Length: 287
Image (cartoon, rainbow, N blue to C red; front, side, top):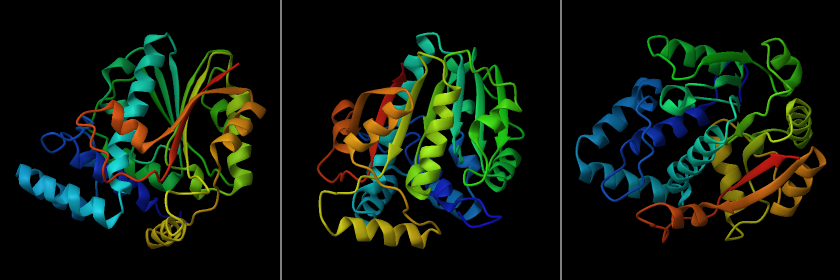
């Protein structure tokens, strides 16, 4: 992200979550009632206008899907998958959650199951300052919500968490969504090393990443061009076996690794004709 500015990718992801909360009839709904309040005025007005009428919401759904060549269709599906992973982990007794590169993630304000959970949100100070201002009047569902500012290129995750009384002896849930592709590979590996060092056995991790190969050869160049337009650059990419090996190096065993077309098959209305597999989602457990 640009120095002293929050990442614009967080704005667009939050806008898509707001558009699909609830989604147009017959499309996935991510139930993110907080997303709209987190948006800058221009995006907020656009989403509000689209949500005034089901036809307008569906037109925006199709328009964004075509403009992004299916990328926008994956965001609500990705959200549903990670929410399901989070709820299952809480139900299994894990009571410590770390959202790495939290952006405008609103899970602490919309998932009631977080009541027994301490939530740590890690992100760049610029993004965190904006988000804390926008959520100042909202109550969190979490037992405790801790904001921990970090520059992933310069600071170690474990050192930052140590300043906030994070328990390394307790199994934790780690969410790392929509971030790895914008970091240098060395920063990705250093962050995974810190996550591994902070994770007690039984900890769980959900991480998204950009593959090196897409459904079409031209898609790689397009993804890089699109990232530059929003002020980012694609820096780290992995194939599924590489990610599994990298996670294993840091003590995690992969249980599932899949793509948007797989997610679409699990959520109604199973609309996957126009979806492209721009990114992958891995779920793993600390062994």
